[in-house]
Length: 111
Image (tube, rainbow, N blue to C red; front, side, top):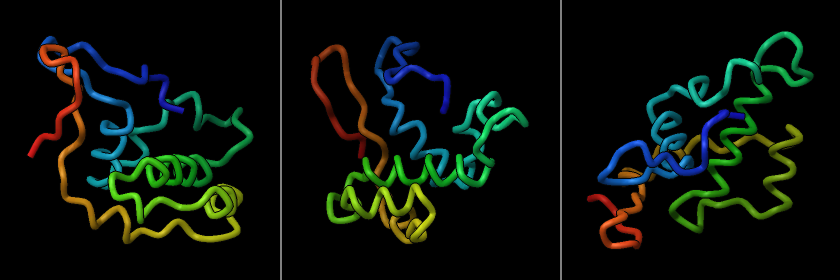
């Protein structure tokens, strides 16, 4: 959906995960920037609204707070449009994204 790699290692000091990049865009209200232009052109069978919903469900499934993640059944129903994606979950987490640090070889959270 984004045409981006899962890990962005263009910065020598850290690697940014695609979920963190997308989360920041969603939190700032820029969901459309997550989508690659080819995914929203007239030839795509899914509408732009559906593509936005797919992004939001994907981000929700990777939420840093486990209690905010939907069950598989709920996620499927959200993807199909049977139930709404809860917007409140995108407003509650104020933490910065997880970053991989090559120097340590592990994960750390920015505070």
